[in-house]
Length: 604
Image (spheres, helix red, strand yellow):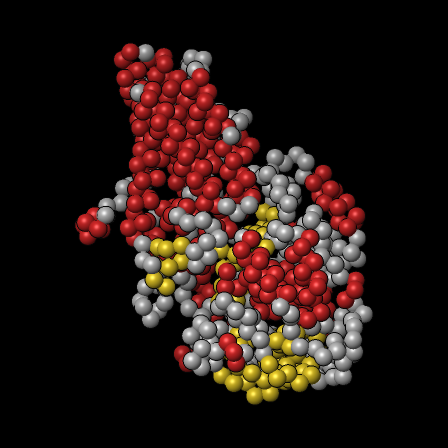
C-alpha cells in the first residue's frame, strides 16, 4: 500500500541528499503528492537529550538526569576513564566505525578509522568498562547493482566477496570489534523497515516526486549550482533523474531541534571546526530529504511499496541500532544497555549524514541521539591527493607486510592530530618507527632486560634500596600516566595519548643514561639493582598503557617483564608491582629497525 502523508509542512522544501564532498547536495523541482498543512502534531514532543548524554522523548530532563545518576551508581565500582561533558566515564560504551561501502577493496582510510576506534575500545575495556565496538559493511545501492552487473555476477555474490576483504582487514590490523554487521543481513533489513514504519506512523514520511541531478558513484543528489564542468564536485559523472516518484523525510521540521541540540550539547560534534560547519549549514535552512528510489532494485524495499527502494543512507545509518537488536528496546536488551552510542567516529566527508540526517531520524522516531560524533581528516600521500588515477592509493595490507601491524597502527595514530588531515610517506613512517619504537622504546626494553638477566641472576632484583628523589620523580610520572592518557583518549585526542607515551619513554631513557647501571654494577651493585627495578616498573606502566595502541608489542614487553596475564588491566597499574625474584628470560627485540632506502637517506 502506497503512503501519502496526512499532514505536510506548508510550502515544504525537499532535498535529495548531502554530497560526500565539501558541500550539501540538494535536489530541486519537487512536486509534493499531497496538500499541505502548517504543523506536525508529533513534532512538539521531541527534544534533544540534556547534557547528561540521555534523551527523553517526553522532554523531561529530570528523568534523564535520574537515569544517568542510576547508571553511574550501578557502575560505581569501576575506575573507568576520566569523565567528560558527554560521557560519565563508567557506563557501558558503544563505539562505532562507519560501515564501509563495498565498491572496492579497503584503503588506508578504512584502516585509519578502524585503528582509532580500536584504540578507544581497548582503552575503555582495560579501564574496566563494558564495551560494544561495531564495524561492518554497507552493501546496498545503485553503485553496487551497476558494478555487479558489469562484472556479470549477482549483487549478493559481489558484496559477499568484497565484504570478506574488509573483515580480513580488521583481522590483519588486530581490530577487536565485537560485531561485524552487514546491511544485507535479514535482522538489519527488518530493523530498517521497522524504523521506516515508525517514521510513517509519526507522519514524517510522505510521497512526492524528485527531479534533479544524481551521482551514482557518490550515491548523492546535486543541484545545478554545485556542478563543476558538468560533473559533481568530486569529479563523478552525474545523470538527470526525470521526475521520479520518491518518498521524502520531513527534514525541514528539525532545523530548530537540531540547532537546539548543538547548542545544549556543544561537544556533540567534534572537532569544533566541524561543529561550526554543521551549524552554519543547518542555519542556512533544511529541505525535506528524498529517501527512496525507483530506478534500481538492490536495496531494502519500502514496506508496502516494493516499487521503491530505501535510499542508502537511511539503510546504512540504522546499522548503529540494528546491531544492538533494535527494534527490541526493552529493559535488559543490548539497545537498553549501550544506546545512545557513546561515540560515532566518521570521516569528515560523511559528517553531515551523521550530524544532521541521523539525529533527525532518531528524534522523529522518539529515540535517543548519540552522545558524540567525531570526524577525522583525510590522508594524502607525499603531499598529493590520493586517487586511482594518480596511482598512489595506499594499501594497508602492503604497509603491514612492509613495516608490521603495530608499527603501522602506531604511525597512523601518532603522526598527525586526530581530526586533522595527514600526509603519508614511506620516509616519514620509517623515521617515526625507528625513532620512537626501535631506538627509544625497543632499545630501552632490551637494555634493561639484558642488564637484569646478566647481573641479577636472571630474575627481577629480589631486594632494593629505598627510592631516591630521582627514582620517585620518574615513578611519579609513570603513576600519573594513566590519568593523563585517559583524558586524551576520552576526548579522542589519540595523538596526544601517543605523545604522552613517547614522552614517558623519553624520561626513562634520560634516567638510565644519568644513572648508568652498567657502571653501578662495579661501584654499587645494590644501587644498580634498585635502578633496574625502577626501570622495570616504569616499563610495566608503559607497556600496560601502550596495549590499546600496540596490543601485540606491548604484551611482548610485558611477557619479558614477567607480568602475569591477569595483571595487565589498568586497575593493576598501582596494585601489582613487578614481583621481586620473578625469573626472566633473555631479552628479545620487539621493534626491529627498518632500513631506509639509499635514495631516502640522500634526500634526508
